[in-house]
Length: 378
Image 1 (cartoon, rainbow, N blue to C red):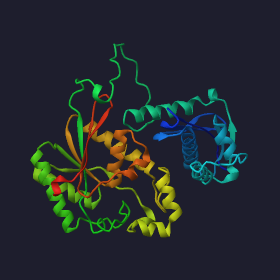
Image 2 (cartoon, helix red, strand yellow; image 1 turned 90 degrees about the horizontal axis):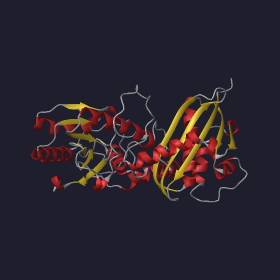
Image 3 (tube, rainbow, N blue to C red; image 1 turned 180 degrees about the vertical axis):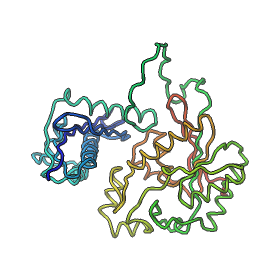
Image 4 (cartoon, rainbow, N blue to C red; image 1 turned 135 degrees about the horizontal axis):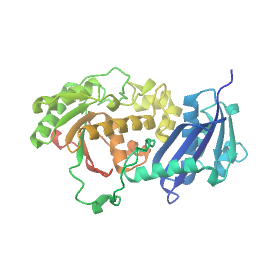
């Protein structure tokens, strides 16, 4: 049985080349033209070519997720990507080679063809790429557009609020997420991968001490009004220490769990490099790559963490919420607030039981207020 027939339209852009960059991709039914899937993401600082390849990879992955046996016609206005992926031009730039290799490995080679199209025929992917760049500039993750509500009587809308120091003072009380990484477990000092599908270790004696010190500091500040935690044992134990002192309940948010590290669970970095060198190298260089045997990438993680953030901000508007989670989700919330590229998570230090804080305003802007604070542990 042959697979479905899809058309993938993909594009990427960079405002500066290199500069703030993003990609967009759309999957259509080849017969009807119906849109079946859309993808877009802000990439941070990158070149046009990198963004175009990222758009191609996202489009192919979306098509594969719909049907792994699909036959796909890729249409792009990038002559470079089309000619290189068609095999007529060599991939000479070292930064492009792993991207081209990743794209080729998503679907069987005989199932994908490439066609160059003029830019005016690639408007949907171009729009998505620009939406992603606009979202990144505002410190948020791109999300698919919602259906338009019924029209209401026209009112004069205020001009969009500027970000940063120029932001007006009438945006109301921001919602503050105080991000607490869980205390140490037996695996933490050994620097071993500990995700959502491993042994789910609890806090060690030192980890329990760290959780109490964090609780003591937070209680002294007296600003926390709600406590939300990942479902993992180590985060629940850490959250409960503060909740007990404040007389609050711990609400569990599934999307705050750690990344699934697959076959890397329980291993140290050097062990993973020895056993799975190619997978580790690809993962460090691509937010769309997954750890060996894992079910999710950093891009997947970012989407679910953003969903959790939006639910929390909506439920606790104007309040201060303690969010107890893990290294990857907290770093992701920080980088989304900053509008930083996905690979920035590999350049942040986040100690056990450390505190970060991000404020979210009604106009969609975010402000990082604190990063990796461990003063309560000294």
